[in-house]
Length: 386
Image (cartoon, rainbow, N blue to C red):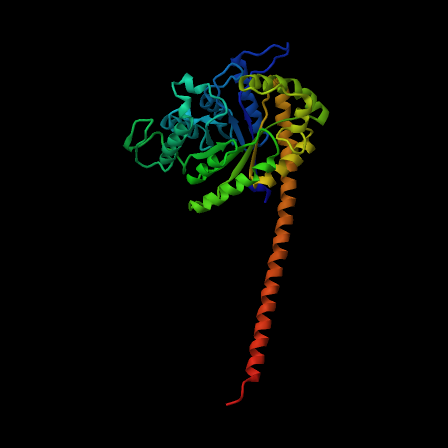
């Protein structure tokens, strides 16, 4: 059963530090991202995702271009966004770019659509933030209409209409694999279910178990909308080293600089080491530590929400390229096999409990039937003979 689980890695192309401690040029970071993806493919991981940002601390503003380069250097790993900010893009252009990537990669493209946690793309591309909700709603509606690859007639309020429009290039085999990434609101979960699209839960703080009700809501909504069950994935940050102490000590200074920078923009207080260590503990969303610690934590999170895929965001602030390469290596060679073992054992235990419950139900039904038969026989014996 462990084969049904998938494991990937994500990056935002964070601008990293070099050997001299200074920040690398954005161009070098882009080249390093390609090498990180090549390693992930060679080690057998299932997915490599790249986020979209338009700010100084991230090097990737055009994920599809980077993914296209990676497609030419890899063989089997699936390639996608993490996420594509659909609200400030055009659904037709997004579809065309990922359909092109799908052709170049021989069917390995995926797109994760979301609203994004950063808002710099809205003024950059001329969109109003007061239409944040409406933009995503309408553009997801149009994107979903493109997925069957049939002529589309569509109209909305924020974009020009389409009439019997085909979009090119067509996806060669089936439909473009499309997910919706959400940050934790019930409305977002129900929206993904409405379109029958797989769900990515971005769990970046607090206990993963608190997302279990959202996963249940998603499954119920799929059923109510008449869609079959769809996979659920988890996206969370992480960093792996040979020991817990090494992982935490290496990651901490880069984590603090990155979180404090974002905190100043959003009105948060400075992060301290206690908070950092709590997030890396059993009830946090940071998967930092030794392979065994991280594997146990991933397995528990996947079980908590019923996820079949886990994508670890391995880039964290200015964490050096070499440290990230080692983290990817440990994730692929030690963490993922261990998680598969843990999930296989848990699935087997679930199957055994289910079998016992089914057997008990069958025995109760048989007992009730026998009792009914005895009652009927007794009633017949009490009847006078003709």
